[in-house]
Length: 221
Image (cartoon, rainbow, N blue to C red; front, side, top):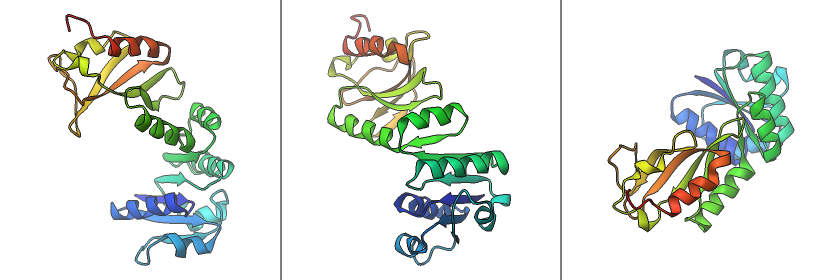
């Protein structure tokens, strides 16, 4: 696939290198020519375009007309969203994502159908996850915000108990478990072990109920 990366900072250059390593054709756009020298390795073979990701001439120099994907990852929210919208609406690129710093904007654009990566929100969640491993942290939220995927360290009281009771109809559901660094899908007879990490889909308005269910396993579990 031909992929365009807008922004040649640490994130953009890392993405461009990873994409090329995976066999994709890559073009990267940046307004600062020094960024190419500073962040891209000398043996990187992709196309470098000096310009702006929201300028159609620059996008066409980068091969937008044959592109299958575009990632806008500059340090500016407005530039990223504008580039993503032009790619999606003008050139009908099927796979588009924008990096966003302002979490409030991220929610708005997700509802408009523009996938976003909210840098601040993701970083905050990662820090909270490591500071308080016994609390749930959000890994993903669908665009309306009504359903989220959360990760939680399983309390020791669940050791030897069936995890099937961590599914409660339409309010929350166990979808995966990580044990000793290996992920697995749950089965009806799966029992907890100390050190397990559970991943659950839950309605946003049922987070308190999920917290209660995890902290107090049923005696018959």
